[in-house]
Length: 404
Length: 187
Image 1 (cartoon, chains in turn cyan, green):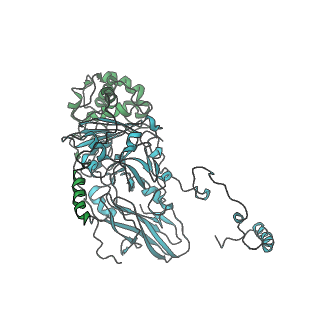
Image 2 (cartoon, rainbow over the protein chains, first blue to last red):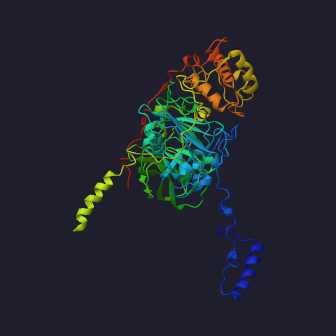
Image 3 (cartoon, rainbow over the protein chains, first blue to last red):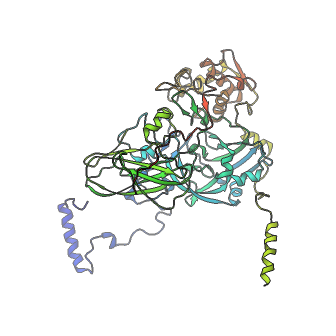
């Protein structure tokens, strides 16, 4: 920027300004210091700087049904671990319904002593919790079917976000209805046009499931289930049913379409794994990363995001030579369970070719696998839960691409 | 001192207060009416629990499919804008497996449940129970799973043997492919 040639016109303006400036107390050229800025509540709900207008959710592959589609978070443009609400990834199966809170109800029934129906006012009166957790679609990171060298972190890993979620522990609501001993699964149903349903093991309800009505300090965004959603920390995103209207206690899984036809992982022997809920440890470098173009060698901070559905991240190693050697990255606190963890590594790029990788280890000791190790076991048609290491290639000259 | 006696007394009082675990009632919400539950209780399980009264034939389903489903799923459900619902048998170990109702879905009840709640895409929950039975019968007949003279109802739908019924594995066998421990990595 600083070595860009100054145009003749700009030079004249600068010179003219300098003359006036010389008569003032300072020589500052910044026009925004010479006039009042915009007033308050302009707009009432603040929006990002216009200079950040390219930091938006994007659709990787435009589908035939825009209401049954997904958009990714621009991970390469974000900092820290929190995803701004307007940039949380989307995955809808029948669009975003517009539901007024006064019209919404949550019914809990089935194997319950006292079936109950709750208004939003009822839900908001219960004791609440706030927890910071990542959410990720198990279909995130499609490295085989149509992966492209020009993919960015948003394309490869963008169905991943992290927010503070506030709501009522599901265990509180279950205690309120009185769960019968035979209940082992819960059907969660959304109030969208897909009436999205998934079966949730009841152990998850007693553990850390939340019936959430707020994210990052404000009520849920419509795309995230306004006014009420299920949130299952560390589990594949599809199970955290949005626009939650019904929970039904049963003594077996309900075998819905989303846990049979979809969200099952086909193995090379033709058998499919079912009820694979946990998001295993995974990491991705978000800068320096695919789609970025750097020119000048020298110092860089390599940074990225790691997470595990099984608990906390214990360490992240970074390689700049395709996995031949590794260095431990520093982990930014707080390091929370089932939450994004920011890692950083100082690095001096010599201007030559490099292969950047990161490898996460979680508190169970699980190590994120290289791609070949995962493919050896699962083949290339398991589709969901691909958590292998990502590789970015830096070419001489500084162009970075996705290694497919 | 006086609080030496007070502290144990306070502890006894606190111990007598029921914990939330013992008495979890906040007495919020209300008891739903039977009609309220029935209106929302639309799920159908693999054992048939939740299937409504009614019936529908392959022949009736053929007409419904042509009118309400074929625009997306194609003639005879061979696929179009939306995915194919037939074929793909024997492809699950292929490089490009084709997962359809016939080749992949383990339960016929799931077809009924999904059509009932989410289809047709442009007008979900618009089909009657008879129509959902009929269109389910037609899709299953296209896959050769039921004969063309089938009339489906709550009694026979859960008994249909789907070809890939035993094609699913649970519980989750992961972790199955962990990476190498980072023994040699530097500080």
